[in-house]
Each structure stands twice: as structure tokens, then as C-alpha cells.
Amino acid sequence: MTAQDLEGRHALITGAASGIGRACALELAGRGARVTIADLDGDGAAAVAREVGGEAWQVDLARTHELDDLTLDVDILINNAGIQRVSPIQDFDPAAFRLIQDLMLVAPFLLIRAALPGMYERGWGRVINLSSVHGLRASAFKSAYVAAKHGLEGLSKVTALEGGAHGVTSNCVNPGYVRTPLVEKQIADQARIHGIPESEVVERIMITESAVKRLVEPTEVASLVGWLASDNAGMVTGASYTMDGGWSAR
Ligand SMILES: NC(=O)c1ccc[n+]([C@@H]2O[C@H](COP(=O)([O-])OP(=O)(O)OC[C@H]3O[C@@H](n4cnc5c(N)ncnc54)[C@H](O)[C@@H]3O)[C@@H](O)[C@H]2O)c1
View 1 (tube, rainbow, N blue to C red):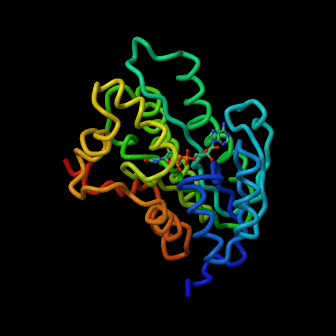
View 2: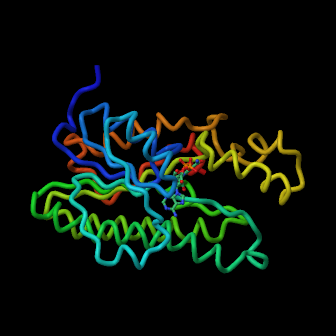
């Protein structure tokens, strides 16, 4: 049986209607936390909330001005919502570039900003940012995503420095390719841009840099997130934990 080491904690997970976020919701709820599922997909959020006995918050986190005055009463904040667009820079839609910065960098800033006062008051908090190997390494055709994730790395470290004296830690988790809808949706685009069949995208594009030749599973990422949220990780802050099968060892 999983230890109930997060009992009494309230966690907010963005993008938790699907993929890694949903796996994190199951992990944290399994460890006793009360979980709020924040997602653009209201039905998906409600379904996961039912699954974990939590609450759903339907929200478009790309509408960042609506988050300016937010207050969040949470102990654990998991910034996870994300999207991907794959295109060479000269063809990259400027609106898509801005959308990715808003959703994946500005929104995490505003949610951290909204959550810190309560965490400081209680003297305990966990900010966990779903970055990526692309927070540490670049790949062609992913200018917006790589820029946003590198920005998130910086935001996470500043949060760690400011939060340390208040019992608040902030860390990034940096997976390689994880088996989720976000990756499945990318396969056709990658095939077109690289001029290869869709059936060869995983092997020839996604896991070429990885020493372990498979996709990461969402539950594997969630188990690391669960540990980072626990008291055992109290001295871990300002760090970026790779789970990329060795990609960034190169
Ligand atoms: N899948 C991977 O290979 C991989 C690898 C490294 C990092 N990541 C990161 O992990 C995070 C989760 O990715 P995933 O693969 O689970 O994706 P996913 O597509 O399965 O889930 C993303 C969720 O975000 C939600 N979302 C999208 N736009 C939103 C908005 N405007 N407001 C609120 N919610 C919104 C979606 O509805 C969806 O439920 C992302 O930040 C992603 O960059 C994923």
C-alpha cells in the first residue's frame, strides 16, 4: 500500500485531464492529497476528478490576464499544462509562439505568484514544474516549446531561491518523450517535416538520443513528482530531474 504521506495537503495540477497530469493526480491522490484538476477540457477534468475524489476547475490558462488577481490556497502546485507545435522558425505562426509562452511560462508564473502567499503563511509548499529534456536541450522545429521550457527552468530556480526561507521548494521534472496524447499528436507533423513515414518517427526521431530505447510512461514521471512533493524531498530545490533514458547525458 502507498504511504499516505501527503494526507492533509491540497494539490493543484494543471493539464490533469490527460497524460502526465492525470498520472500525477492518481499518484498524489493515492498518497492522500486532495487534488484539484485544472484543465481547458472540462469534461476530462471532471472525469479525472471523479476518479480521484477531487475537484475540477475548467480554465483556459492561456488567458493569462484572467489570472492576474488570482489567489490559490494550495500546498502543492504542479505546473503541467502544455501543448506542442512543430515548424521551422521562418514558418512558425507568431500567434502559436505567443500562445505557447502564455500557457507554458506566463501562466506558471501567475499560478506560482498566486500560491506563494498561502504557502509562506503555512511555512510549507511544493512547486513542481513539468519541464522537459527540452528545458535543457534544443531540437530543431520546436522554437516556441524549447524557449518556454528554458524560461520555466529559470522561473523554477528563482522560486526556489525566494521560497527556501519559507519552507517552499521548487523543482523541474525533465522527461524525454512520454507516451501521451501530446506525443501521439506530434507523430504526423514530425513525419511530414522530416520526410519519413509515421511508423518510423518514434525510432528515428524521438528515441535516437536516448540510451534506453523506449518512451517514458506517465506513471514513471508521476512517481518522481510524488516523491518531490513529499517531506523526504525537503532539501531538494532549484533542481531539474531528468527522466530521459540518458538523452541529456550526451
Ligand atoms: N509527452 C511528452 O513526451 C512530454 C515530454 C516532456 C515534457 N512534457 C510536458 O508534460 C506536460 C504534460 O504533457 P502531456 O504529454 O501529458 O500532454 P497531454 O496533451 O496528454 O495533456 C496536456 C493537458 O493540458 C491541457 N491544456 C492544453 N491547453 C490548455 C489550456 N490553455 N488551459 C488549460 N489546460 C490546457 C489539455 O487539455 C490536456 O489535458 C506538458 O507541459 C509537456 O510539455 C511532455
